[in-house]
Amino acid sequence: MSFSERLSAALRARGPLCVGIDPHAALLKHWGLSDDTTGLDRFARTVVDALAGEVAVLKPQSAFFERHGSAGIAVLERTIATARAAGAVVLLDAKRGDIGSTMTGYADAYLDKNGPLATDAITASPYLGYGSLRPLIETAIANDAGVFVLAATSNPEGPTVQRAVGPDGVSVAQQIVNSAAVDNAGGTPFGPIGLVIGATVGELDLDLSGLSGPILVPGLGAQGGTPADLRRLFAGLPGVIPSASRSVLAVGPSPAELLAAARRHVDELRAAGF
Image (cartoon, rainbow, N blue to C red; front, top):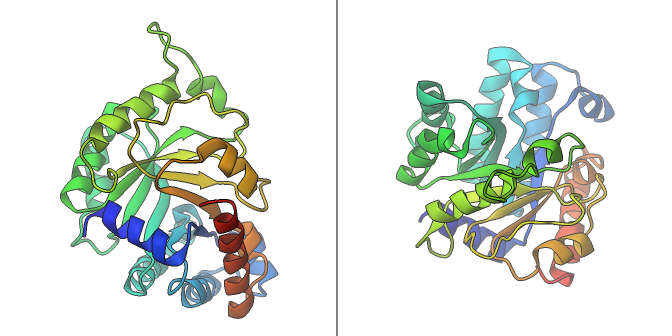
């Protein structure tokens, strides 16, 4: 199956939700775990065991694994493999962005299906120019994987760059949308190049009608995003993936409570028409 087929099937069967795996120091402490690779591994295993068999998408945040060095990367490798084996689509939140051979190296690390860190998709930053992502995009397409490109983020510094308008009168963010649409042309049920658009961006001054790609929407729950916000911004678009992290992870370490929190989000999103 292609990436878009796997993702679409998971969203239909399991519901429209992505849950982040964000083992930052404060959360490890909240769970009563040590801030080392032992605590990291226990945290990741608990989340995967609780959710990977039922939640459509899991999103490990690479930084919280990298901070523990090579042993942390080993935990990330196991986390990705175990979650995928349980049927979850795994989206690695790494926001890589570089040029040339360096970007090819990132592509080989995360999107080559034969690599030890192979994942279903990765987040990427296009702010060295969308064309700088070409090695990542080409490797994703060749390996039935996906790339989610930052378009409109909710951090206060983002609009300075993302909403800047070029000589043609088109904003930087809209240029990213348009470029992704070209790479998605002809994809079924949609293409492999997604966007990242925050749930709390306010008014969305983007034309997404031609994207034909998935949209990751972080910020649901603890960051203030609601199903009503998502309905206002994205109603009628295919492949919308609301993402929650703290509002699910904060109820751990009980696996039953983690699953119950995820299910509540799914129920609310389905009631809102997703």
